[in-house]
Image (cartoon, rainbow, N blue to C red):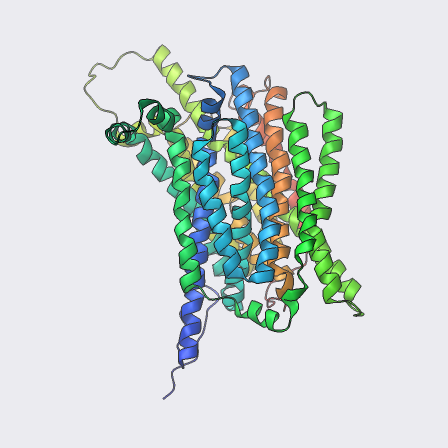
Length: 559
């Protein structure tokens, strides 16, 4: 009796298809290897992004030579430089998304993924040796090239090798894996803080100079956290040894479609990168007035869009040359790229313009609470009583506990968001996610004046709502593009949104000065909660924008 054919349900964990031949078994093995490799890549991707959100403020203080609690003026300087480095990172990710997406469509998903992971792993580690904010920004830029590419390549690979019925679950796992990386960073940060004294002793016993040890361990050991980013480099060997190439891409190469991607077209990407570079400069340089900043931002976005789209445009022109459908196919693809970039931009602006500052905000609230407690609370009658491990840990590691709370929420949110897209349709799900994100940001920043358990619960809700898009986007973006442009198309769509997010991130530094006198409903004076609450208004734009996008529920991936 022959074994039953393979089936996959719409919900639940997909089962490995029953093999009727060695070919079927090989296909099932390759499918799971591709998923495991991509999930590991996204997890380290998330860790690479999360590490700077957690240690960036400490890094800026260290590199700017600011010790102790910063003054308001110093905090503005730290906030501005923190925003600039984040913006540079996002610009690099946008460039890398197009660059490595092009490479994935040209030489294959797996080989391009190997190169992207190696790039972000090595240069994240090099960040631990930076001696100035400029050096750190340059290293973060190169690292982000690989990080931006890995996202689009992994999504294309997984969505192409798994059946259509599994797409929602796969998309949820993609988002969950990235946020598991954030969670991992938070846990490692707590462990690292507890072991700094042990590391100091060990390093000195190894013969390292005291000045070098002081540098490595300064400001809660942020340099060691960055150096740990080299660990994903081992994934490159896993990719090359066990992960098979996408059959859809192999078929496209067999038809000669991949040969239409030409290296000379990458000049567009190089020119395009000048645009966001200009945007970062006009907002980072205090000598530039607001009029020129607006002009520079508009011009920079135009240059970036034209430059990044250029390789796809040339590819489509060569592919459909002489065909009556050439203009329709080219116009349809470009329109979808731009619309999807705006949808991604809403999610990314919300994340990098508000949620990513939660760790910095938690640290400030914790420091504020400590000062108030020291000034007003009497000494405990029984000083021998140790505080509870959880509350003691929160006071020592506010950034790490906040990152853990937002990450756990994000893992839940990304899986639910992908399933919502399958249950209710892509457009309704996106609209609901925008509304929930808008409300969660306002609740988090406007109604929490102290760091504690309630703050961490709000962080969980914040992460669940605002990160939910990263389960929805891997579900929706691959459905917009054909196989021959899928990696590049969704690479542009997701990562161009990072340029929009970079602009929003830079506004936080500028808004800190403008809103200094305003108060939140919790009575807090200006600063991060007011600035981030203003930026979250972008979710209202997303609620209207989604209805311009096509509904793709129940449709197979376009060939």
